[in-house]
Length: 437
Ligand code: SF4
Image (cartoon, rainbow, N blue to C red; front, side, top):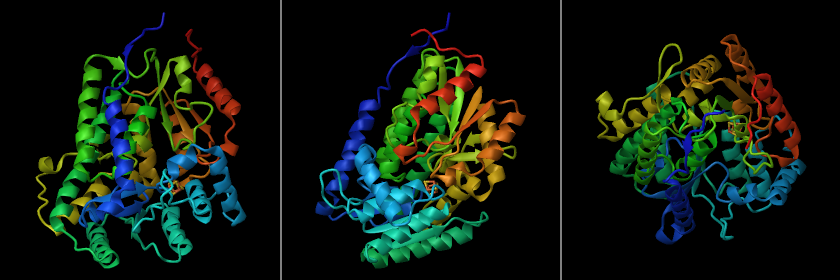
């Protein structure tokens, strides 16, 4: 007889949907209010443009991404267009190929209601080379009408190097937008950005609990607010605090993501962005197996963690716990540099594959995981970096590991039957059998 935990949908789910709707509407009407549209490669450092006033942010592929991802025909047309233009290699970043195809077809910057939403500028931090290339290509394809600024991730943890780039970026933003930069807004945003990371980490830390209060798919859904708003807004903090309170309550009352949890998995690496016929992260549920998280979800630009010598991740201290004052532009820029140089496993892991492997192994140990699935994602080499070595390190610690190769962008490459068979074989070799429904 399999133990069954109580389970229920998150009470804050309607708030998540409401916030996403609000963000989409605000983005669509930003021009009417004279507010800026900014595009970026990820969610970090959104405090920097915040000094120009309220802006609307689209991380990644632009305002039309969700529509393209939900429409196989449109998605295939974009990828085909990129191929025709010579961007066809599997080794090339999948989102970048889509990016190029959508721009060439003139649908990149279209909002869901058909209005063009061209960003005022793009900024990105170059961790993976293809992020910087994406910004450059966009500038080229729009005849240099979208200025872009690339912040170079420090090859070593040098606060002064990062601060000088941030300061240069501020001067550049004032020049390209003609707007005056306000330090008080930067200071407030920086405090929020730090706090957003701490709250996200506190939520993820509760995933150590058995049964897990949330599953990985829910975690990814919750991050959409961070992706769409950036980390600098007070609404993001209010929402994450609401989630944290609810997750604490689920832990106290043993409310599980999966009623039949008996096996815990990490699914590491990017998952397909399009709707797959097999719900990859929920497929193991039929065995009583639940994907409880991943380094990607816990740290991917959102979480703020203190890393101990052996790779253990502890929720990072808040600014006030550290006694750090953020009252001037210089202090704000230093705080942002420290946040990402010292407390971001994602960025540390991009600097050093050894560190990345160490974090992943410790995560599997500390979050009481039984086995790990690694996605050697074709089309996202940035996230697949170090997967083979991670598999060896995990196996050396006794974790069963399986590796898949799912593309994150191209539905043509998704073989549902193969994906299910691989998951079935792996879980059955671990002694699991499908549970009676
Ligand atoms: S991390 Fe992956 S999706 Fe992001 S730029 Fe690199 S290859 Fe592309």
